Length: 144
Image (cartoon, helix red, strand yellow):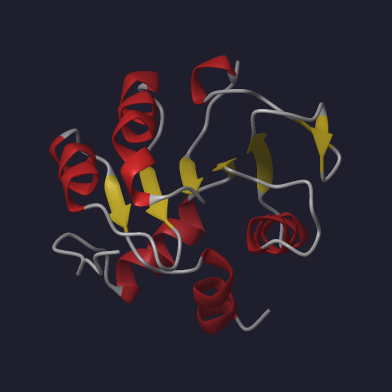
């Protein structure tokens, strides 16, 4: 496995601004399993006031929210897409975020870097965060 270094990434001031401005977060790869990182992170984000939208191939409900199979199925505005998928899976997910027209931020969770997908997002006017954990950064910035 190749360890990539992010060539496009937000700094902490930008990350703080992201958290202050987003309200609805689609979590791609949100597992129903409470021991998985995606579940723990989404539950935390939900507990601090964000609307979480699970995007997962199975299940009908996760964390009390309706599950969607894809970003394109979500019938309301999404501010940020928080991605828990392997780096190779990111280009089509980022393209789906761009195609929605309402997404402002794509966030690739800790350990996930795909500079090609990041460039696609940035070129489309989206903010990009790579290889960072939303829960860790939110706690560091807001002390929750």
